[in-house]
Length: 114
Length: 112
Image (tube, rainbow over all chains, first blue to last red):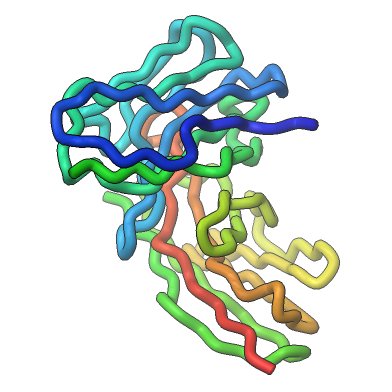
């Protein structure tokens, strides 16, 4: 089954404790992206990747890092999480970064930073 | 700058037709998407418009007018399972490689 898989689905942690949210897709997609979704603000892009070893900042990259060493994986790293990073996070992928390509979203990761 | 506007909430009756509007102001335009998102779940793709006109897909249709910066999603024969948020998103090629700018979404409640 074609899917985007994120782990963990839920995480409660404390300020300053490094964490990684993994994202993996099995569709051989070139383009991958991370979003955060907050009430009243909608989906905002954090980082995206056009292909392996090609990443770029989205609208809200501060406090986050990503890497794309393999085509299927695109982890999101919070080196020193803070409470304002409490949010619902979605990973997404598409065949390419082409304009008409719809993105396929993972089920989301609900992160609470205390 | 970029601005995408959608109504925050709408309510409609089961079996009826509802139109969800989206207006956008972006520096560039390379297509508009509609996504459906049930509460606590992932957004799922509904439609893509890049040329003016109406695209029909079953009970759902999407319309685009590029000159007016306007789109709508039309849902016919509403069912209770259509209760969800509907997200309008615009491709703006002037904002980086291939960013997708999302509106804040319209929460649709379908009532009996």
